[in-house]
Image (cartoon, rainbow, N blue to C red; front, top):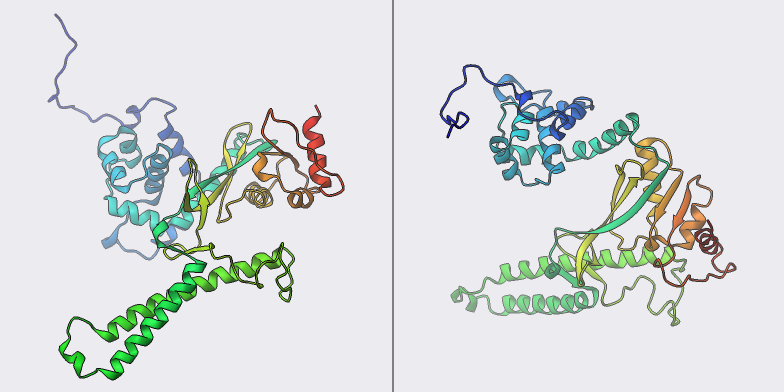
Length: 371
């Protein structure tokens, strides 16, 4: 049998061109050309004062490698560093550079703000190329788990109990230190000052968390129209002004996160990620992150983000029933963008809304019934 030549140890007389390693139109080439057209001055500014003895990797190369990695689902710095040796597309973008995983991780951390701002540049570039039409956009949200453990959270009711217990423990330790100084010289097993400090630190952390929950409660009640002098009277106001429910929780490792329901059941400390997608090209034109579990109030912020990114509002926005809100419909009635928001599940009996109580929601229901 006559086979085609196969010589694994055969050396090349002349090296091959990197440009011949990938087919024309490959994503790596598109990303390379795109990054070359972006303003990377913010990245270069960090290294403006450096000298020849400490030469960093070129920011354009690092950005291309990171963007291609994230676009292809590779997020680990160690995996990216390995891909620069093993993957042809990564080697083309690296062009003979092999930054270590720590260098890649540090570059991302140092330039986190600049990398996020590249998103706006890419969206504007896509619009300049005619890819983004801004006729119709679709908005939706998804829950993103926070980098915080459910076991590092505490409810408001438990905080009150824990504070009382810690205060009693601290008082007991202080009394013990006062009355038994000489006796405790021979008890190495317990360092009373250290125990007091440890408990006091925990007490301070709980007090700060409780203050944050109470502040959020006050702000929420004021936003709902409650006067601070309103007394509890049942119904809407069951508690004193600014007093949260016992089940209200605060996380110690990530105080900005909120407990949200996750897909499949259960609850986690999470954030609510919002995206707006152009109907024509399916390009994401805006992305925001909030710590409010409900989508109902997010449409104004997403439309504002689209305008900030592209300098123009879309003609129409589509959203599911999670964005239904009489207050938002009224607020955006004259914004220049047509709202099309579902008011219930498709195929189910249409809901009826009282035009007197919810005029803007009733108008939306009429729109959804029309051609």
